[in-house]
Image 1 (cartoon, rainbow, N blue to C red):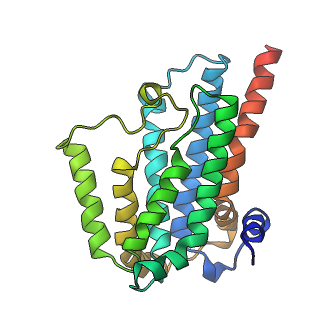
Image 2: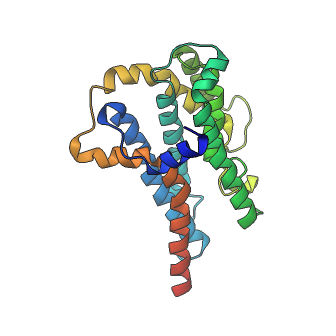
Amino acid sequence: MSFLKKLFYEFYSPLKSETQRLFYIDFLRFLAIILMIIYHTGYDLALLKVMKINMRSTFWYYLPRVIVPLFLFSSGLSINLNQSVNSISENFKKLRFRIFKIAFFALLISIVTYILFPKFWIFFGTLHCIASCSLIATLFLGRSLLPLVIGVAIQLNYFLSLIPFQDPMDQIKIKSMDYISLYPWLGVFLIGMGLSKISFEYLSKYPCPKSLKWISFISQKSLPIYLLHQVLIYSIVLLISKLI
């Protein structure tokens, strides 16, 4: 199947069979998607001055700092499942479609935002970070202890501020609408990789309830939703701003 056909399948594929889905990972992605939609709704309402919302305080400040770890942790969990220890080149072959797919859409976001918002274009956002983490994952695929140790070390350094750093989500100083630095979020991704096998051992026994299969479907479509939700939300909020 060609690269473009695989991309098309990403958007239009039906829900995979229950045996191919892990509900605990689907639920984490679903939670991240819902919180992301809430955050971007507030962001657009503030941006277009429909509502007065201070995005740099309280709930709105901390919300993206929950969303990003959820996406990266669930990505780390899923990327390391059922993988064996191989050479870096063999690991890259396993992950190349995933890496190219995410990098392709990350580049597309950069191009579109540069054209529409040249002063605040997205040069290293969430998808750029996930693509970079996925590339780095080729060094650790099939391993648990090493990525876990490195991931915990990165997070400890971040929280203890042993090395000075800039706020990794400070879009104002960086001048970007979505800036997600590799440090410290790579640590969250690697922790997900390190915990993938043990989480599978204890949590895979809990399948998705039939009444909640829609959660798995939404999770499976996380990339299309990520790409399209802001366009829809911004258009609706823009229309509301014009009406009032």
